[in-house]
Length: 296
Image (tube, rainbow, N blue to C red):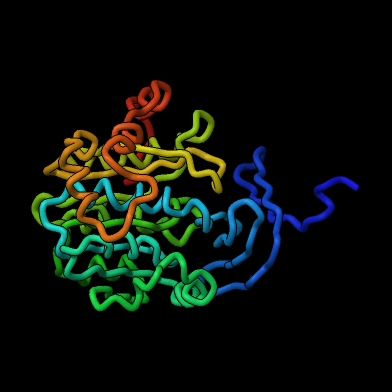
C-alpha cells in the first residue's frame, strides 16, 4: 500500500500550476463564517494549522518564525512602544508577540471576523498564550477600514497581519493610497508601519514588488525583508515603512538590547537574524527596482 493512502490530505492550491499537500491527522473544525471559509486541522509535520479560504495561515510548529518576523523588527525600531495597533491577526499570535514587550501600555487589535477569533481561542490557544486576557489588550471586532477612518489615536507601530490584497480577498480594499494616508496619519513621530507582504520566491515575487512600489509613493523608507516559512513551503515577505527610520539599517546592539527586554525567549529573531532577513538576493532586488504597476 502506498504510504499516502494512510492519510487524508489537505491540498492547498498555491497557484494554478503549484499545489502543496499536507497529511491530516485530525480535523477539528471546518465551516464558513460571514466572511470566509475556515478549517482547523492537525498535521503530522507542522502540528495544528489554521486555514482560511483554502490558504494556510499559520502552523503550530513554525508560527513563531512568521510572527516574530512581522512584529519585532518594527518594534525594535520605533521610539515609543506605548500604543500599538494591529490590523487583522485573528489567531492572537501577533498580539502575543507585541505584549511580550513590557513597555507596551495598550495594544489595539482590529479584526473583522469575530468567529475566527473565537475559533482560534477554542482550538489554537497556544497561539495567543493568554494575550486576549492581558489587560493591555483591546480587541475590536470590526472593519479595519472604518476604524482607520474613525480613530484619532496615534501608535508607535501599525502592524498589518491581513491577507494579501488579491481581488477576491476581504483585505483588497485596505491596500490603496487613501488607506496608506490614513495609516500614516495614525503613526506617532518615529513610527513604523509593517505588513505581511506576500511571497518572495523567484517565481512568485510580482505581487510583493507591486506592494513595495505602491508604498514607496507614501513613505520615505520602505524596506522589504523575507524568510522561509516551512508550513507555507515558500519564502514569505514583509515590508517595513517609515518616514523617520530605515528598519533595514538598525544597529545590532540596539536590536539585542530590545530583545533582552522581551518577556520569555525568542525562537527566531535577534540581531543576526535581522541582518539575514533584510539581505535580499539579487533577483529580488532587481524586481523591486523595476518600474511597474502599483496600487492607487
